[in-house]
Image (cartoon, rainbow, N blue to C red; front, top):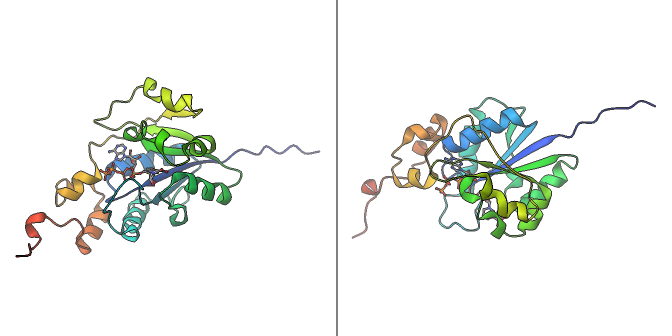
Length: 205
Ligand SMILES: Nc1ncnc2c1ncn2[C@@H]1O[C@H](COP(=O)(O)OP(=O)(O)OP(=O)(O)O)[C@@H](O)[C@H]1O
Ligand SMILES: O=C(O)c1ccc[n+]([C@@H]2O[C@H](COP(=O)([O-])O)[C@@H](O)[C@H]2O)c1
């Protein structure tokens, strides 16, 4: 009898509002590309957020940012994983890759929020959780205690680089820190007149 070694495929899952994608997201995805067999990325409608740009545009911007990393075999956009609820995304991922081990990726700002998500018990049961440090958000191992008390396998990532930037800042600022937006995404924003400066927007009398 031949014994074959079958290695589990480790898949990282990263969902983002991507409104717009910025270098914080880019650093997360690039770091994952070095550490996982495969990285699946999608844009979604966060059930806790309102007035987001059209999902198709956010998905397009994310696709451009991913293509710009030039790692087509490892990091890919998966539009079909997009759902406001991560538990539903994970159901889809489990159907797509039945043999894989999943790691769901969040930034430090979501650590305290995740236990309150829709069917968070399923999320924690079906995926390891990897937390990326985020400037402005303190992150100690003790901050993971609550998630661990719910049975989560949680770890803190070591990112390739850290960026003190958020999509909301970029949306307000015309955008004010364009160097924190990948160049390919900047071009898309310009072409589609996304996030216009308030002073350039005509006011109705
Ligand atoms: N600069 C950053 N450093 C580390 N993690 C980040 C950073 N920006 C976002 N993230 C993480 O990436 C994921 C997607 O974040 P999201 O798309 O909401 O970006 P955001 O900048 O927080 O947007 P917004 O300001 O609109 O809330 C979340 O898990 C978030 O914690
Ligand atoms: O499942 C939930 O209840 C839930 C609540 C808030 C956010 N999420 C997901 O978490 C991911 C990160 O959200 P965001 O807005 O920080 O980019 C994104 O894929 C959202 O759909 C999921």
